Image 1 (cartoon, rainbow, N blue to C red):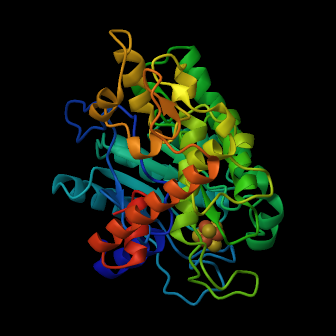
Image 2 (cartoon, rainbow, N blue to C red):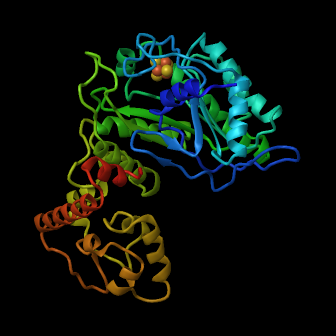
Length: 419
Ligand code: SF4
């Protein structure tokens, strides 16, 4: 049986991986089995240090043979090492599930043997969980770079989600900081998995028989290497387009390891938060990355990416709320995707005024500078005045946050969706 000390080492070692938020998988329980994964997915929250709660998140081993510069588990690090067997992981998962501690498993591992042997043991674990222990709950499995395709594809049939972490935003940084990994060892398996997902979709394979029904995700470490936000977002956009990823997660670099190749301080949660906002604009608001950020630039610290874009394009505003196309409403600061859809629905039945917008929870103190309602405009006239008003608004908001939370880091983590 797995003892508490080993479990503590393996869960602590897994905490910096943030690529395990999950959703969209449906796996129904079968007679004699245990658990299920629902369509709505499992809701997760992240603690400020990156731990994901509600999944059992652990490594099979932290005794890594690779030496990624930024990783506390790298071969040259002086940390306690341990490993567990597939059966130990299965028993623990089942026990935790039965006690309602968890809703699923996020399983990763250091490369403690050859990549194939490591992947083989991960594969054995998930197959045992499904077939021997009858577990129908959610499973997210990390892929091992350089493992054979056959092993990866076999595992993909038994889990809900898989992820290969891109880790660093360029090949150059990967070579410098994670020399045993290569671009191909991370991107080719993603491509193959995406092809398998598309094949299942085209051939209308039944939900329970599809490979990784909840798709793929990846994680990038931000700030350990010099790439700009513009470069990071271009890579993100291409991963969504070419690999069909569900999510790209950004993990702000935390200097837990001392190395001359790494910066002395972390990137900070605000940078991570801005990248998530920009990512949202690419996925749901119809923005091209080139509109958000030039290749060599970083995102604005003062304004969120949508406000920043609007301030640079004041000649396109104000737009009349009763006639503007949906694509333009989505670009108005203070109008979210839900708000934009509410407006287009409601205006079919009559002209909207500012009171109607307030009831729809449009953030008017921001939106008023960019819209008219029945021809009326209540915003500031000049671009500079709008900028000043938005800045003031931002300061007020952060003051309110700071009065609720005791310190700035907690406030920022709340802003980035973490608890
Ligand atoms: S492969 Fe690299 S990132 Fe993964 S556990 Fe080993 S040293 Fe850490």
